[in-house]
Image (cartoon, rainbow, N blue to C red; front, side, top):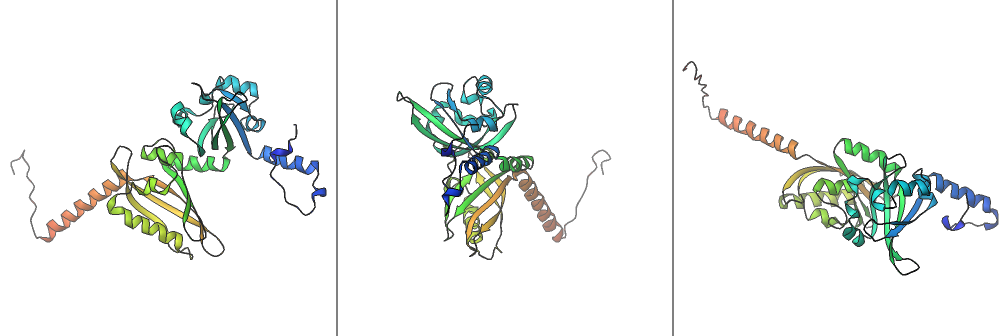
Length: 298
């Protein structure tokens, strides 16, 4: 394998002489074998034709360049798992920038979760091209499968030292659960979610979220049920729970959790509670119940 020193991270050390080419080669190997970041580029034509693919990405997908181009027919659209590829509609894909996620196909046809980052550039003729960095998300793979089995979705917020939310990430499954497609119609912003909270639930949910983040003792737990407005305008019930990763001083660094749709369960429970309340009110009024057998006329 040809060694390219530019692919390694910048190194800080008190003795640069002792870090020779063998050490850099070893660093490159650890990146190569541990799901490092690969790149893929292409054009904004009808098929989003592939222009280049990095060796690292080919390695992680168990492909050669020839086999990848044969399997995809040279199109980015054929590299992604179809169920998650709505964002590859040409008009939407042109608008998308920055971080995202998705599932791409390995050489054997199995989908694997990846973290993506998209930028725009031009080729040597000045023709616009898209540039994607792709990182295999192996840790997320198993977690996503577990959440899929229990019909839940992941989300997380990053916080600064003052407990302020500075970065928000909604998983693709989270958006799909609410009926949305990608970051264009559901951006990675707090109000993408908070604006959908039912007016009767909004203050209660937001207060618990902020109290959970602010509690440096980690005693307050974010475990809550609330209604969210779906993309079709209807409200449904959800349950969310989360844990907080804290710095040494107790301030929140990240709050991560899952959300699940409990609408059917909640409505069934509420109906049973109403029936029980009616029965209690009925019997406490000392009323009698009469049963009529129409066949026997009794």
